[in-house]
View 1 (spheres, protein in one colour):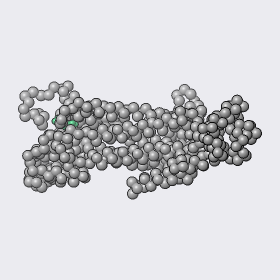
View 2 (cartoon, protein in one colour):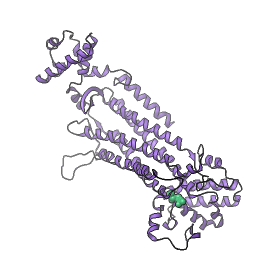
View 3 (cartoon, helix red, strand yellow):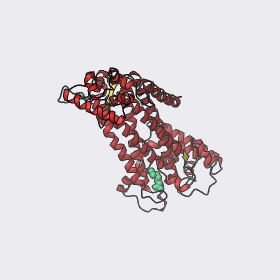
View 4 (tube, helix red, strand yellow):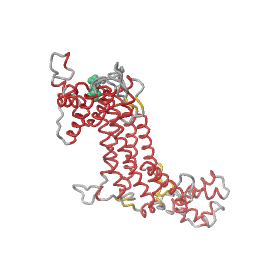
Length: 460
Ligand code: ARG
């Protein structure tokens, strides 16, 4: 007989049971469920809603169940539908009537809202740690390659000289935003729905501040309908994870390009690459490709929950049971991807000479050539045209700008003098880009220190 069996005359159809059950996946919430029930029982006892003896028996019983679950001694059953009813049934089987008093002044609706919120809060902390570790790896690699000149790209066409450090630090800044985005989500979600009841609060003299405090929330949620039907925090979490995966995916795409023979800017460690079953020469960046591919799953998780929620009238509807699997899937995906990605970056071999060689072709110092003339007094727009003409001359002769003899440069503009060759040296072009946020060593050093301070601040 179901816990809610009172008004029913027939057993539930077996297929309905299969559709209705959530224990197969929401057992992941057992810890949060028990913590929430302990806080609720203690509050009921303190408020005199149940006796102190019953409260104590409940708490003791729940702690025993927690231990038995963690030792693998408990088999959950779909007969009891979900984690909440499984634990309540176990409790009652162990301690009798006191167990039946636990659900006083509570509903599964505020119970599940509480459990899920605490679960998301916990997983945010795990993911934040992983993000900080990834940023630490990026800083370590960036420190090593502050003077390694590589071509910076727009439209995947060589554009201007940057350093490998500058490129890595761009991602470090994205991950910093991912951290603060998830922190925002965690701050906003930290209000306690427990005590919202089924939807309309309760007639019992509960103390919502006590349970909120006991469960490390800042305050109780303000509105009981909102308390049971809000899933914004899960959506914010999934949005944050989607954006984070988008960052990983862009980075993965570049790793894949850099591993190709066309680039060969890096080589992955054997532990983070795979071979081909037929082509003996192959070393494939499967890890990066999988991360890029898994981004789609996480977007899908966000879209499924947005879609579940979009038409729901207040307050609780069973549709909302569908909130969990997408969030679990996104958590599993992200928590696997982040450490693998960090380790892959940490162990890769960087090939600065190949970057430098690539930087040498493609006229990525053309802007610097125009700037040279501009600094000698020519209006920038004219300098741009003159340099364009020089690029065309070089193209026809198969030379780079710095390979053109001075006479040929002067034939196009008398402003060229022998110091132009210094101005065209890629190392100088990069080093002189010392504007705030630029690739000059002074600026990459500042950036690395800023990221390191950000990480330190949170690890402390
Ligand atoms: N397993 C349910 C869920 O995940 C718990 C809430 C059920 N409440 C209800 N009134 N049927 O949403």
